[in-house]
Image 1 (tube, helix red, strand yellow):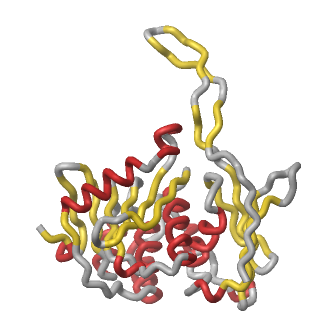
Image 2: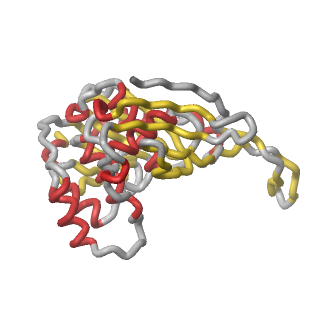
Image 3: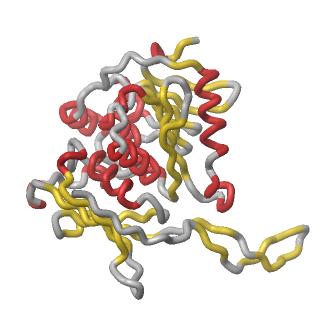
Length: 272
């Protein structure tokens, strides 16, 4: 059973500041992105606290559990409850109840972030053992990717207001938008999209993912675990992300900005 209690909170706010204009400091009230902790509680125990933008909390929790390897399908979640713990604290908590015991859950695999100094070869070998290679024959074109890119940017209302958020968007092979999310964290934005897809029972192997942030190995890990065959980012990538994409049959595209792009892995899915 999935039960959701919504606590509506603004995703942005205004603050008093000063703006330098023509050599003068003038009072201003800029719009800034909201950043708040979200506690993911699994089987009664706090498992993770994510700093994220308000909105799509249950989708973020589901996507996080899936991309972290805590669950392999939505059917493993017996109860899903999102609600603030009270008016005074306004704490954001998502309760997730699984059939398995909390002590049997995996350690947090994504705690290793860029710059942590972990050995890339050891990590890659471990990931190849735990993940299945993507099995998908879909293709796309650069013109279609550019249209997707423009559509994703046009929908970034929070970014237009604040300039401080990332976005992830999922499209079908015809270039139609399926899902979209914004968040202060690029990992959170992707988890929100994956969570929405799981809840709506979308088949990821027939989709194309676009990102605004760097396509690091963590982002590739989430993409491959979901089975998404094509990942395109408006930004760059890393060597470990390229190796992971090459090893597990994921098409990786970076610097998706008209009139060009970079293809780092499995270029056969991009038709000239």
